Amino acid sequence: MIIDSQDTIVAIATAPGEGGIGIVRVSGASAERLLNQYFDSAGCDPQLTSHRLYYGHFRHSDGELIDEVMAVIMRAPRSYTREDVVEVHCHGVSVVLRRIVDLLVDAGARLARPGEFTLRAFLNGRIDLTRAEAVIDVIRSRSEAACRVALGQMEGRLSREIFRFRDGISDLLAEVEAGIDFPEEELPLADRQRLIETSSLLEGQMAALLDSFESGRILRDGLSILIFGKPNVGKSSLMNSLLGEARTIVSDIPGTTRDTVEESLLLRGMPLRLIDTAGVRQTHDPVEVQGVQRAQAKVAGVDLVLLVVDGSQTLDEDDCKALQSCDPERTLLVLNKEDLGSCQLPAEFTSLPALSISARSASGIDLLLDGIVNFFSRSTGSEGRETSLLSDRRHRESLLLARNALERFRLSLDADHPSEFGALELSEALHALGEITGETAPEDILEKIFTRFCIGK
Image (cartoon, rainbow, N blue to C red; front, side, top):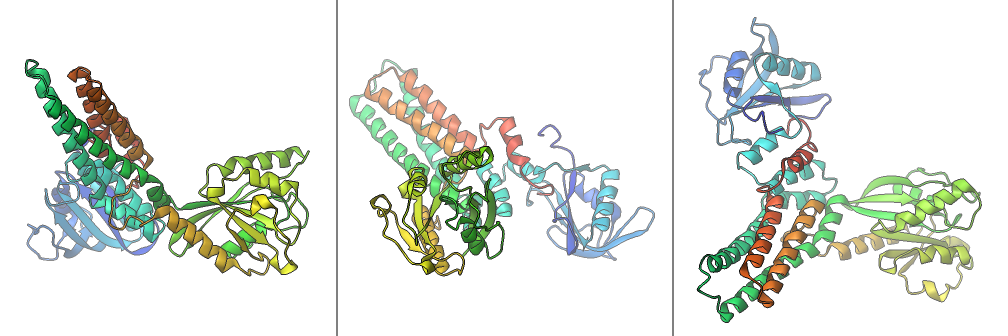
């Protein structure tokens, strides 16, 4: 995907469908020539001023009117891609947008691949890889919190942290390599101790950033919530109450839900993914057995489990079986059917935070939503308003590799191993950090990242 980076590329930059305005974007050395070929600037100077919108008409070479448009040229390097970029703002109807693109392709432009404009911005040094990835996160963000995390990364908050780590490790490597180049000047004990302290400080800073991953992931992707429990305790009714619609079948017949049912919703600006599951119980029905197994398998992979029990009945063996699958740190006990009365809880359930509701009448649902929000707030802490957050698993894996390499360097110094060993560890740490910012990222990683983008961005 990097071979044809000298081509002039074109794409529709606005979302499909009807709209008041549609935008066609062009980037490359021929962008201005292509615009001049079809744009009639209504008597304005044909030498358009950069970064100024011009009114005019887009016409076929034979003079046929395509649309009434506004056009702008953004000359390099003051553009998104650091190349000459042209945008044609026309009416947002697909037939007009396609005709404009077809004319530009006929004149020598090439259709852009997904993310190719942002790829060129990265290759031309306008943004590093973390900021490029943040672009797609902004586009795909489903909540204010997710958008805030992505915007912070897009403005360089994360990359500044990574570059600070890189500079610190580069200084360590320069000092170690100086000792390798001049072996007769043995590294004094005081200098070795200083290098150990410096590397330990960097390790701690990296560890703090790694610790932010869970908060960043939840803010970016939302909270996954599993509705769990034995049959006929009101799990499907609870899901319908939370969604505000009859999404799942509610029946007095046990085992109605045989598979997981997933739905998304936005709760006070926070994205949630609700998962309704088959009731957990002893059964000989092979289909229901599979549903129970899938429900139990889901428990480990979610952020929060709503363990639903019938609070009006004495809890039994199947309730205890459901409890055994749950992590108490990630479980909220929901005592359903409060309108039918209440029974004393067994001792093993009393340690869980609990809320009483009636899913059928929606009584107590607001308190349950408050409990979910409070859990979310505990998980995300400060929500990353002013600090850097890791939210991408790729970043976390590379930073973990760098931190581990730095730890091995410190241990090699402590054990007085040859300096060459330490230099190799520091080089590995720099390579891992470079994969985050894109300096050492292999082409297959770049391709995987940029193909996530929409065409036109």
